[in-house]
Figure 1: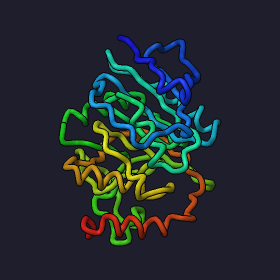
Figure 2: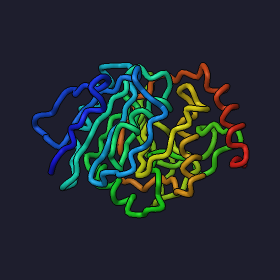
Figure 3: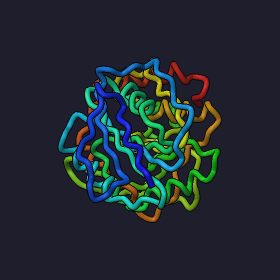
Length: 262
């Protein structure tokens, strides 16, 4: 199979950390200084391609995250592209810039401190996306967002391994036996098979972009799901949360999606 090694542009793209041992993985670094938010989406998608999108400001985390991606098993005739976004002013604009720069049908948006430990995750993604009504997959989600719109104050489903400054935990939030519809998913990993613009016109920080995008997919008529898993798909080294603007952004979210809230 052939890998599309086109650069995003000569001015804002550099190929980084080429993996000579695996010719089916290409890596790119996107600098936000030349991002044009008015750029149109690519109409023709490569349905044999996965794109991992990472906003990063920490080289150590970035390198570790990519190391785990490099170890994944790749389905026959498929290729992987990795886009690392540097200097993003917020998550939504960073994700939009990367989304518009890739023709991959399947996109995996993940935090730089999320490490994929399920080496067969790409096969699992394809299995779930056999259902064309499924637009977005998460690992942790809320079947019914609480009135506060704070996901961790309500009932969640999913399975992950996470680390705080105190301990590492392997958490099964709720054991499900089939793909389960949720209202919102946690943004440490978001997987899509369709491109919908991230709401950078509303969310200009690092909070509620994930719940917003979940709502945007549902508004577009797609299902957002958490699949059943026997073991965690990823490890999230989340450390200490920064909630400086979280509650202010929550009010913005609640106003924007008032007609979709309970």
